[in-house]
Image (cartoon, rainbow over all chains, first blue to last red; front, side, top):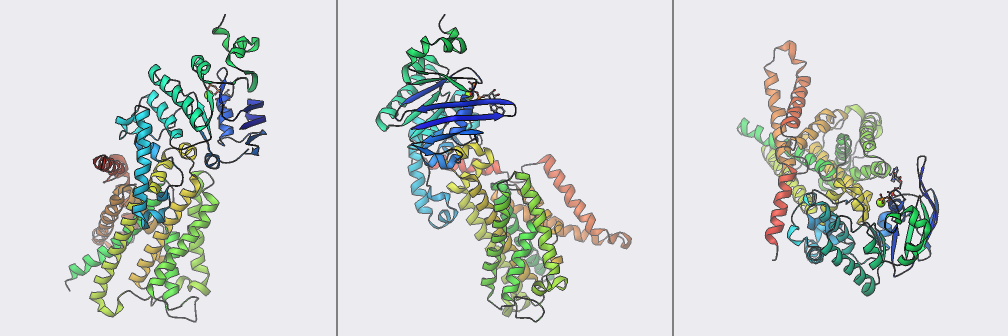
Length: 253
Length: 320
Ligand SMILES: Nc1ncnc2c1ncn2[C@@H]1O[C@H](COP(=O)(O)OP(=O)(O)OP(=O)(O)O)[C@@H](O)[C@H]1O
Ligand SMILES: [Mg+2]
């Protein structure tokens, strides 16, 4: 589905992603784990078109997508969330989600003028979809609140909600569990699993929550210092010496 | 007619033209955050386009096609839009401050062009005999009819902007002002929306330029002065409430009242100070701007109030 080949990203003297090669199988829920600063978020940003790599290439279904813009990739079915929620803080929770669906009639200013009826009808549909998503995320009663007033965890959920507004093919989730409470976390895990099985969405999940990864993800890719350190099932990863040293040392003795 | 009434009609007409400009700037700055400090360029290009399309043919300058006024107005919008499209395509990719610099530059280029390209614009002599709307109604009827025409334009522009603002189009623009990355992650091509807002605003500025030229009946490079156009329109929008459509109109009327009122006051100045009157009035407006920014930086009608009303309306219509 997604292949990354010899990808490099430098920030000044620091090489955040260093000759990174990995692949995400179609239909999988792939985890990317690794210590802080390993380059996971930077990798996501390059895949989703937010950062231009200094070298290497990215393929999606065999096509070179290196350097394409985020909207272009979005329309190819590739969406991402941000590790630090990027909510539109002075817009309502509902508006944050209603922004997302593509091909909105009312995004063309002349159609907004000339066909208000058509715009209204479509807005109603979009709104219903947004309300469903908000119901699911337990944010429905906050739909008219400004998104900036949400709690940290709620913002995280809204971030996830954005990807649920469309029917994507690949979803890149950057630490979806961080700051989200246990009950809701179970629900999220379930939803990801269901969307993966029923709709066939491919997920790539950056996560530090090992329980969630063990339950949800295969394969697991471990990154450290911008490179892939190991790759395999969670059980294999847990046995890997290098990984134990670099990352999981504290989990098992 | 009563001179006072005459003056009132004149006042409303000019204030209305300023309201058109202020509404246009509201699309660019208020809704989208585009820093255009060359408003005068788009106004002048619109004004000249309409004049050249509609005046009688002349041996000394180009144009003079003698076309109907409506064609002039449409032409004004199209030319200003094209100018904005060119400026926008070059600069909107760059950092935000480049647009500001580019718009100042374009204003200067337009001014020099109008002054020097005499074959087209008749240079500093300007162009007289610009056809006025409703010329066959006699001086009083004409003034009244022009006022109605201007107010009608204000109303139409107002309604169009309001509808666009409340539509998904306006939602995207608002989102862009808040966080571009989120909008990109939502699959919207940010620069395309910016460009649309810039071009739409410029087209409306051009329309205002045409209204002005045909109302005054004369056009020259001097008619479009950065201070009296760009600066005053900015003060109007900021004082009225940037981002608030009603505020843009209100600001135009209030600031125009203060601006023209200040002329009466400076009229009382002793003759040795009278030459400084223009600078004094500008200083007064500048002071007013500072006061607004200090004590009511959202303007008289704030964007936030408008948003609150929008959200309340949404919530009321819920479950319909
Ligand atoms: N925009 C940037 N400018 C400069 N340096 C950056 C930038 N973004 C990331 N870095 C650096 O690149 C390295 C990798 O950062 P990245 O955010 O990809 O790590 P991460 O694996 O996501 O870590 P975490 O688990 O803490 O989120 C870090 O050392 C960071 O300081
Ligand atoms: Mg990260």
